[in-house]
Length: 421
Image (cartoon, rainbow, N blue to C red; front, side):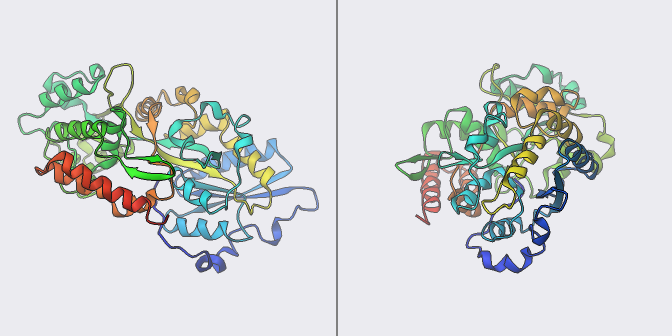
């Protein structure tokens, strides 16, 4: 979820660098019959303490397997994974961003794990991790952990305005509350004009999507009636603050804006609260969370589910040991420990209670039950690279006709998604 693949990467560029990263000669079973399993996990997906505890526990339960975890940096990981999959020296398990699995699977470099879904608790996987982990009807990525956006709000400003956050269960109630907050120099919400992941949630709420597939061809769908209703709600919410109409949450960083003390709410992952409090220590103890509201009180708002899947390269030297590793790390005991240690949403809906004591993670877990992913096709990477959705949002928010602008953006999405076909 933290990286985007670069187009046109040649596996040969990274081949030499991989000689020290994959299995190598030392991967043969040792004289004691111990099988090494080489694993690539991403920076900050686990803490050093959790990694040590898991490795010790795993090897105690599986003395015939030697776990060798290498922490990888997000910067440049797309190229590195692409090269590893094309080589004969791949690790046995790789953590990959959930929305990138389709690209890796298309290359033929991943092992089909469809027949292992039952033993890996596939019936309860979060949809936003499981769906992008599948490609062409086969399951390649095993859900690892999830994260999604929630509403971070100022408890003191809500109290001053007489707004009860616990009573906000629907989008209409959210608009009413935000209208009450948007007074006296306080922004009801800081929502930049190009936060397209938030827009996607509103579109999904309406039953629409960013793109649809028919007969093997993808088409942009921002001009559907459902998607237009999603944009209409975004426009209404965005007007209840002073967010810029022509930039996203990183320009300027919205946590820094909220830290200035004049913003009642932002849409963010819960970790944003830590950044806000670091920038303005006076706000410590004054920040709380609630799930993004849905259209009705019985269903939380749809959210984009970020996170990671675990994959097994086709060139893995020890695929069975790899599956054993994945089974443990994604199983009940270690998922609960991981969620608590890292404030993640567990990979299965049945484990949401594991983070009940963590307010931010608990709010995420509620939303994750209605999690979605971007269109599951390798062509989506080209859309994100160009991102006509952002330009569309700015055009509408600055007075453009929504239907006309949506039609233009949908055409751009269609072109980008099918450029390589």
